[in-house]
Length: 236
Ligand code: SAM
Image (cartoon, rainbow, N blue to C red; front, side, top):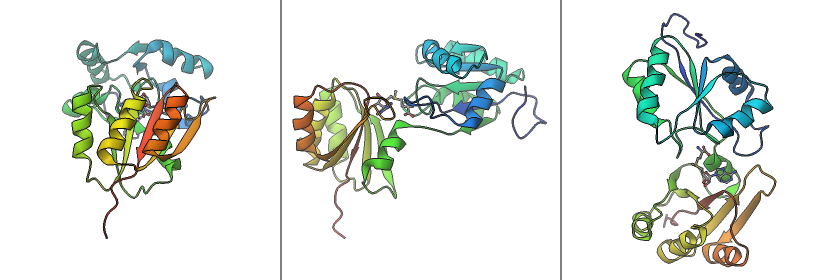
């Protein structure tokens, strides 16, 4: 079903569709329309996506596309796109390809001249940054650092002189170790820890790295976390 602006094309279109990071109301009207109109939805986790589709009474067929099956599945998806089907790519939450699968599919589309269209919407990094209260004329999104201490610390060392605001994703199990490394390597900077944004237990902590460590040592970190950290103060 050709639903892109360019209706002359014979191939389908890959729509990269952002979905909520928690609150199901955070989805655009366009995203809902595209999810209804495409021939197939390629989802990181089909159980997760089924919940979203059921909520919005969307009956489009869906299939899985995740890190473990991306080679075999990618080829199948490209074959369908070439044959004229349009596909919506969604991840579990937020914007596909941002610390999520999908990048390779976008590259395959570029290589095979299949149009890609972004259906923008939520992303945890932007949601957290927007309320952090730290400068955002420019920023550096670092995603997840390595779970390996040595690698993580090396990356933080590389970032020591970065003056842009830094944004990280981190698992609740490693949050304290991450903050301890931040304190030791970057110093006692301003830190904003955004927890469970848009969800029932949404919480925003603003303080210094050492205050954040103290807080999360007394209340066990649970849920999903995005951390925004002030860049190095520039001398000018
Ligand atoms: N593609 C997604 C996006 O655009 O937001 C990010 C996917 S990444 C695999 C998932 C990570 O994003 C989580 O581990 C957490 O660090 C962060 N995250 C996702 N939802 C969040 C939320 N509601 N509040 C805070 N951080 C969140």
